[in-house]
Amino acid sequence: MIKRMAAACALLTALLPAACSPPDSSGNGTSARDKEPASAFSGKKLGETPLKLTLYSTGATFTDTEFATLIAGPIRKKYPNVTIERIQPSTTATPEEVLSTYTPDLLFGVLQQRVLRTGAYEDLRELIKLHRFDENRLKPVGYEYVKDITKDKGGAILAIPFNINQHVMYYNKDIFDKFGVPYPTDKQMTWDEAVELGAKLTRTAGGVHYVGLVPDNLAGIAKSFENPVLDRKTGKAAIDTPDWRRVFELQKKIFETPGYITADKTWNWTRDHFMKDQTIGMRVAWLANMVGPLEELRQQGVEFNWDIAPAPNFADRLGTTRGAQVHALSVNSRSKHKDEAFQVIAEILSDDGQRVIARNGRVPAVVNPELQKEYGLDIPVLKGKSVQNVFIGKPLQEHYIHPYESNITVRLTEATEDLAIKGLDVNAAIRKATEAINKDVETLRTTLGEF
Image (cartoon, rainbow, N blue to C red):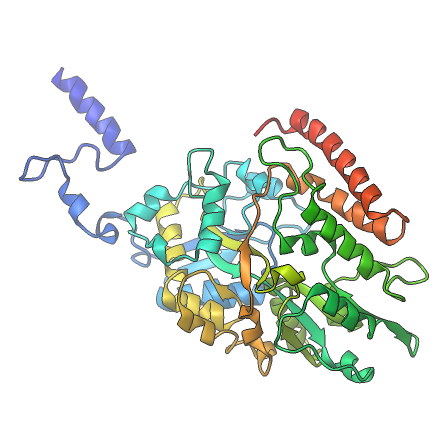
C-alpha cells in the first residue's frame, strides 16, 4: 500500500507540482510554496536564462515596425537575454496550416474561432492565478468580450487584451482644401451630416475621381449597433432586424451620392485609395488598420495632409462610436515555455508596457486615464494630429463572433454589391443575404459541426 501511495504521489507531483506538498505547521494542508510570490516558485522566471520565444499574428493589422516597437523591443530592453521573433509564413498560408507547421509561443491578434478550433489557445486561468495577474486593471470593454466567448463553455480565459482597437474618421485635408470645403470639427457628426459633407467632395476633377465618404461598407456601419450577424443559439442569419435595416438604408444612401460609383461600376473604396491614391475625402476605419501603415508609408517618404475626427454615428446614438475590436495576446497550448510566455504578456500589460503602446498609436487595454494623455506622442505620423478625437464617444463591446461567422461574411460583401450596382433595394438585399447565409449555415453544420 505504501508503495502504491508513493507511486501515486510521484505521478501527481509530475502533473501538478504542489499536489503532494507536505502540510504546513498549522496542519491545514497548505503548502509553504503557496505562501510565496508566484514568481518565486514558478521555476521559470523570465530573464533568468537565455530564451527565444516566437510570436505569430493570427489576422490583425500588425506591422513589423509595431512588433519591434511594442513587443520585441521593450522585452529585450528589460530582459537582455530574452528574444522574441516573429513567425512570418507565406501570406497565403491559413492559420490552421501555420499552427500545424510551427509552434509559436505567443499568439497575437483577434480571437478567431478557426484558431480556437485548432486547440492552440491555452486556458490562462492557472497562469493568471500563478502570477497574480491583476485582471481588474483591464478595461471591461475588452476583457468582458474575451470572457463572453467561452461563458457557455467552461469559462476559459483564452487571451489577455493587448490594445483596444477603435474606429475614427480619417480625412484628407488636401481634398477639402482643393474643393473649398470646411474640415470636420472635433464634434461627432451624425451619419446624415457626414453623408452631406461627403457629397460636396465626391466628383471628378482633372481626370481624378474623388469620393467623399467611405464608411467601411455594411460590416463597418453595423458596428454602430454591434448586433450579431448570426444568432448565437441557432446560428441562423440575424440581419433582418430594425437596426440592420437602418444599416442597409444608410449604405444605400451613400451609394446614391451622385458620382460615388464610377462609370465602370467601381464601388468598393479601400485603404489604399485613401493612403496611396489619396482620392478619399473621409474614411471611417479602425485605428490599427491605418496608423501603423500610415507610419510605414511616412518612412517610405510618402506624406500628405490628413487628420482625425470622431467617427460619425446615427443621431440617436451620438456619444457612442462603433464596436471596439480586441487585439489580444495568448499563450500557445503547445508551447514549451508557457510560463515565460505569460510573463511576457504580463510585462506588456504593465503600465510601462501599455505606455509604449499608447505613445505609439494604440489605445491601451488597461484602465489608466494618464496613458490617454500620452496617446501618439512617440509615433511621428501622428505628430500634429488631433489625436484626442480618438477618445470622443464611448466604444461598444464587440458582438459575439459566432463560429460560423467568418465563413459567411462574404454574403455581406455580396449584399453591399447588390445595393451598389445590382439594383436591389434594401428589402431585397436583406432577403437575398438572409437566404444565402442560412443555406451556408446548413452546409457548415455538416462540415464544421455544431458548436
